[in-house]
Amino acid sequence: MLNRELVSIVTPMYNGEKYVEETINSVLQQTYSNWEMIIVDDGSKDNSSFIVEEYSKKDRRIKLLRQNNAGSSAARNNGLRHVQGRYVCFLDSDDFWEPNFLETQLKFIKEKKSAIVFSSYKRINTEGKEILKPFIVPDKVDYYNLLKSCSISCLTALYDREKTGDVLFNEAMGSMRDDFVFWLSILKKGGYAYGNPDVLASYRVFAASTTGNKKKVMKPHFMVYYKVEKLGLIRSIYYFINWAINGYFKYK
Image (cartoon, rainbow, N blue to C red; front, side):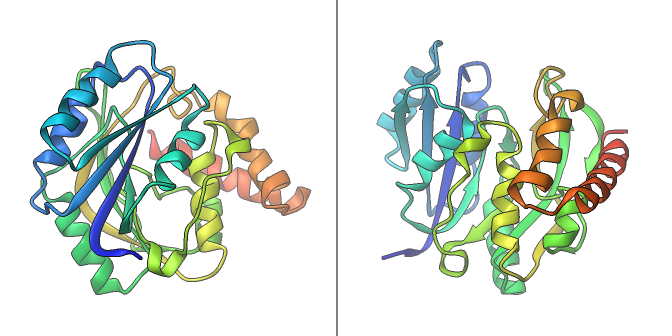
């Protein structure tokens, strides 16, 4: 049975000792307090799990799960299998929220009567300084909009399990485009995800990350269209070109 007002936060973590305290503190500072934070240590080799363990001793809402290294999709699925809340969101161990994130997004999803909402966010570097202007999200997107430009970020999305059912990540994707496929799988059933223009979070951009290095992402992204969504060659090329153009302006 769903805990109807509880928000479950799933955080995959791999060698996150440098930033995870900032991430957890941003959750502890939320103006909405009915949450649980499930942090899944994906075989870290640093002290990040010990940092989380200390937090979990002080606050029962913070829970630590450990697993062998298997990638972000497997870590998120591990967390999703343990959630108790009606509402679910994701927060990576190097990102953080504004204090009003949960309160604002919960109000927003109820106003829109939607299965998914997401928000605008800042882009920061490893030192926490803004390196690009904030990414302002569109008012709403459906499955076909999302194929052209992935404007839903795990960092700011919140969804209603009562409406989506229990959804898992495609672990065959590893840590490449797994979040994109996840949102597509929900929106493919119909309906819209609604974007909140308020800037409610900070996303850390790493030059060597999959999102920071577009060349690494290009082939896996095309294969989402061609192999996962089975759109055929022509439609796959069409959506890939749209995504590439939109991605250029997103990070300009």
